[in-house]
Amino acid sequence: MGALTASCVVIGNEILSGKVRDHNAHHLSVRLRQRGVDLQHIQVIPDVVDTIAHVVAQESARSDVVITSGGVGPTHDDLTYRGVAAAFGYPVERHPQLAARMASFYGDKLTPVRLRMADIPSPATLHDAPGLWVPVVQVHNVFVLPGIPALFERLLAALDHILVGVPITLCSVYTQQHEEDLATLLEAVVARFPAVELGSYPRIGDPDHKVRVTLESRDGDAARAATAALLDLLNPALLVRVER
Amino acid sequence: MGALTASCVVIGNEILSGKVRDHNAHHLSVRLRQRGVDLQHIQVIPDVVDTIAHVVAQESARSDVVITSGGVGPTHDDLTYRGVAAAFGYPVERHPQLAARMASFYGDKLTPVRLRMADIPSPATLHDAPGLWVPVVQVHNVFVLPGIPALFERLLAALDHILVGVPITLCSVYTQQHEEDLATLLEAVVARFPAVELGSYPRIGDPDHKVRVTLESRDGDAARAATAALLDLLNPALLVRVER
Image: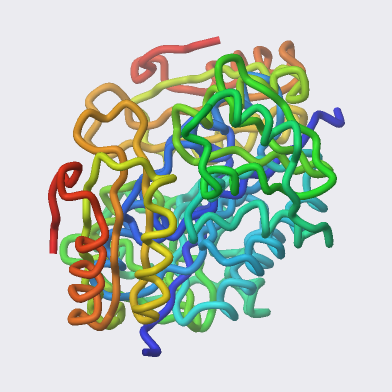
């Protein structure tokens, strides 16, 4: 169907060392799904310019859009702008309009260190969110967002006009049947409905259900027909509920 | 210092689509840090054999050990064993001892579909956890674990004898100073203590502190000396607390 594809690159030693738990990749995955955009790949990488450059270039070639999270503050370990610039062979330069916006935001408190946050890849396109001086910095198909979740979420919402995919219909079937007993039934449905993606998610120790089966498609009628076909094959006495 | 390095590969469309939130990568990052092992890279990828094979081969070359999560159940979307086998040009074959263990666990309930879970890359080494029939399947430096968090955690604990690194000392300084005001101070400490890694983590809207600065090193004395040097530079009136 040629829907928009996306990759996510999370940049930060603190995620890899477990000091901080990343929230942005999951938030992005939910948001992209709502918008019908296919998230293909997530990478979590350290604050190293060469690594950032290599991974950003790789994901830029793989997906229609790349969203990065983290590494855009003023301290020595904030290297994402340098890495993204290097991915495309661009310099990092002071952006006059961004510096001017910071000046009006910070007033007397605009120090040279703060102004470093106006040093971004050149050329770049800026996308603004209401009430924030910090923009999304776009270089080619790469969108650079800060790692602080509250900022990430507000800036991601400002990209809604770009992140436009094709809606996906999701149906879910919850059952007390064992996953092993479902496998051949699921294969029969997979064979009959090639446009529908089936997923099987077992739970251990959950009194509500043993398995959730998901049936997804950009063809909503196919998703619903596959769900009906699956229900014909399941043991009705062990069925918990259906969402469609 | 040549400590053990690790990569993590999370396999599952359900993570990329936001239907399920991954917990295993964060659990692994915390556990590896406790054991002094350097987690270098995390990738989250779909249930596609070729993608699994490519990414596993890439991470196997990058790091000393690779931990994978997910895709080892009995259904059509469980393709991790096939992908890991393909990464090394190996076949997938029924493993007699694993099949025998499943037979003693399942008894009369051992169906052909369940037995698929004994079809693993060959050759492979198995690592057992107490009370579980499902093992960690090791192929070269790649360790394949199931995605269900309760199983992942128990099986990861069974690898403690392999995941042996060099302990890291972590000191943390919490302050109400702004990150922008800290940047040059941090750079002075970075320049003076090359063996210490400094991280700066701002919080928005947290009454407790504005920034957490972390100072980490496998040289514990250096980490503590760098912390003392940083404290000399900070505004004592805005210091919240120190952990060391």
